[in-house]
Image (cartoon, rainbow, N blue to C red; front, side):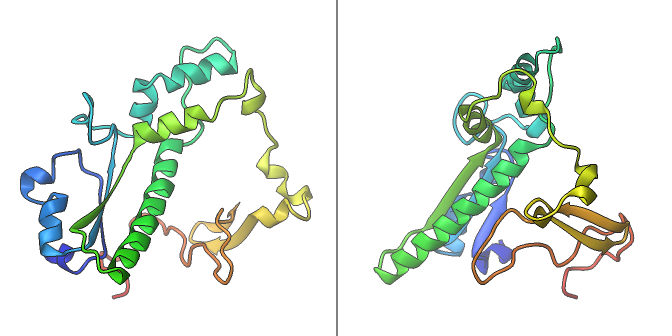
Length: 207
């Protein structure tokens, strides 16, 4: 609670009801820090029969039938096929960040107009992201699973090469996709890349 008193945003990924049982729900946080933004990420959302269940990306893909649907659309006789990346995790992170930005905007607007709000709550679930992604539709057959091999990067020029960035890292020279966001006057990205596991001291960033 000491950390929450001075925080603009509290982000947590515990199962719904878990922090409330410890006296750390949105109402309690708002009493300690009026106007705090509480961003919650869960597997199946704060309401419904499965809200109390723990979960993670791959589990939600499986429980929702998404893996079966992916296998059916690929059409190679597989019983199930996971997505080629943790798309629910990535999507949930983007949506949670967008929700926090929206909450910050509303908090500033409410402050200017003299309205007082206890807490601004943002709820994102992996199941909700799954439902949204599926609503976008799927490619029939194998077309959605085919693409150019990224190892031919050296043969590309112009716009295709502009999508990538090369840096020296603790693992050697590494080429990777640039950050997807484009913001006028600001270059989004990473100041530091992931180090070799266990190579750094256990200290807080900035110390």
